[in-house]
Image (cartoon, rainbow, N blue to C red; front, side, top):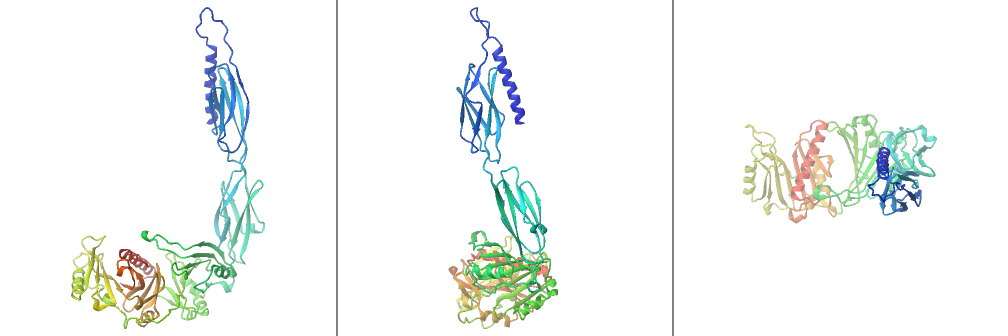
Length: 557
């Protein structure tokens, strides 16, 4: 298109020039009959421009015509005519080869050409990423190759051609990395352009042996980075990614997170491991493995429970109702829990113990079921609860309408009479989605949050803003028939099957409670176990409600 425009402009300009120079002007008797021929000369008919561009070069134009013009056949050249000077400026040349253009200077019927050459840019070649860690199960990866050269190549080690297949596109290379059933392996790829080359390293975890069929993490809560990397490397693993601790954005509901490490592992069943540290203590919080194409029952058939028992988790057992495996290592105090994800893959969590409790902390004489007996009882609607609380000397501090079911109370908050200390506050949450006999919202108590002013009645502060349940309270939970159920969103869930009661006990700080001082709180939920998938969904819903409650109270955990 540029060439067509250039030729059209040339034709029009020449035609105008000819007409201007050939048509005689009106003359009187003293004007000679001959017309002066157009003349044109240039101080230079060739230019060589630097690849950087931007700097003007001047050509002197000498002509007997009152007007002259200049046209270029390239978009990267700008010409300016001023007086008897032609200025030529080029845009930067980022390509790896010289480029040329032509400028036509026209004065009347005369014309001259200027040949322009701009030198090539220095050859560059970039690859991203330049290091790839692949699981032993195989993977497809894309590598972006950016170069200003016309041609570039990607060479691969001859030995690696047996397990890496390349497909080259314009600025991309697709790598098909085959599964690895042998030892860990490594390959080098070289992106080349001219004398330049960039190296790409590919590391793939090995397929492992019977001894690495299943994996155990580093059972140390205060490991150094060197210790973790050395441990995983000794097992044929490669570090895939590292994320430093992050403060998050609490005001936007994004919590802080601790250091995180991801590894590709030499296990046919667990191709990857993920370590997460606690943000406040910088101690290990949890290690996660996701099984490759296997669910919890598949792991059992592979002998996973026996493997756990052989490695210190003597009480490891399968819970059919949860469709999960649980166990505790008495020696190092790590716990293991296994359950299926929504995609049907087994997820293994090794949860690290907190620091050892420094002293004894007296707890409740009996487990505090508090007002959980109100759940589902049609008598306990907001007016009745308010009546009972006020009669007991409590003070109602909040009564908030349900955001989704207008005209009905969503929750009430009461501060207790000091005679009940350290019991400090209760929050009643009401179910407005279920219907009563009249077909109206039930508006009955469905959840309960109770706060005690004495943190140490159930928890202790491990580090500033980080809390752990006391050994005494954990013993009380066990005595009362509560079993650890799951961890979700940093919260620990304990379930009493006989009472269909789920509780979430924790140490926490609420900005709206006791001016943000550490307190012990417990959330109570009526809970009926259903299918494993429904159970997981319900726990997610409960965690979402907990987060909403925390936000309402100004959680500072």
